[in-house]
Amino acid sequence: MENVVRVASRELRKVKSYRDLRVWQEGRILVKEVYRAVKAFPKEEIYGLTSQIKRSAVSIPSNIAEGSSRRSTQEFLRFINIATGSLAELETQLILANDLEFMDSDMLEKLLQRTDNISRMSQGLYDALLAKTTRLATRDSNHGE
Image (cartoon, rainbow, N blue to C red):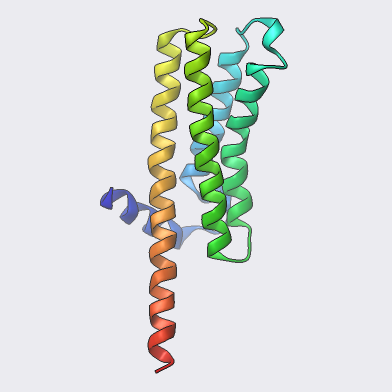
């Protein structure tokens, strides 16, 4: 995990936009894969599980983008938490889709590997941002003495 935080810290220094964040890029790939996977779901699920899965998937890169565009690191951290919640929601819905035999185990495993990877990146970004805010707070409190 420490390595993920180091990579995320280096990445943060190069970020000009949310589009530069690997976690956002991977989130977009996940959305495309999810949309392809749910095409095979029964038509009667279009307003049920299919819709829920799509919304959860889209929420992940969307919240990362929105959070990175906010004015404070604390707000960014909050939106990373929301994206992480959407990720857990998506994983649960994908498992349920497999339980209901809407999706085969190979597809489920592929998507869960991607969500796990995104989860690690998201946690690394969160930890890097938290470390940055801690360093800034420590520096500011030392200057006030």
